Image 1 (cartoon, rainbow, N blue to C red):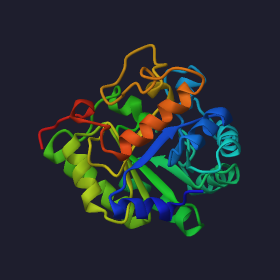
Image 2 (cartoon, helix red, strand yellow):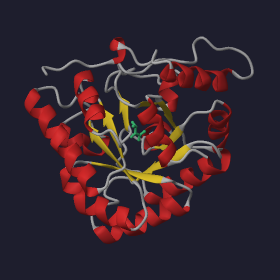
Image 3 (tube, rainbow, N blue to C red):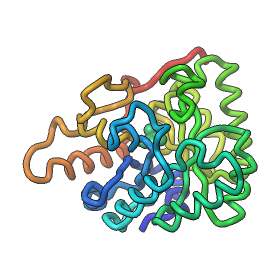
Length: 269
Ligand code: KIV
């Protein structure tokens, strides 16, 4: 089973990290056969599994249920799980909720935010829970942003995001996930933290790894398709088509053929 130290080593070797979201055992098994490095049990399940229009209705019990299913289906990938909306608003809640998802099989928890999470990160790290911090476009704050928009587009905004990254790493964050930021900012953050794997989604070609929502990369998204998505299913056929799409994603990420400039955002940096 891939560990956090394996992911750190991949970064040091310049070997990219493949990551997909996953919510159930059969997809998790197909990802195991395709040797996907890491699985995110994302609160995106609120949208793609439950049919809500945001991640806000998702509960800790939902996250634990799907984490346990994924872990049963996959003994290879590093599994990280989101703490959902308002599940880390107080330190007491944070510890209790982290316990629930870690006991369900997560190897790391992911939380959304910036410098203000320092206390939460410290308490988790001190208690043996590795933390990934999601920055940039953080979907749990959709109503603060007023929609799903690219973040860090000016030098000032990019520097603020870098300061947040520094603060969460100083507090003990072991991984960063950047969503929808200019490619140049993704590159700067990945270079700034040699010990910390930086996973991107719409964060350009230079982050240490790439994540996509599995339904998006299988072409199951009937609505708006984001710029950073590539459909890996369209070239597949036959009984193992889904597994082959996962294999194609893994090898294109490792070969640095995905993402490209075409999947990246530019800013004024
Ligand atoms: O919940 C999720 O799937 C995520 C990804 C979009 C990175 O956080």
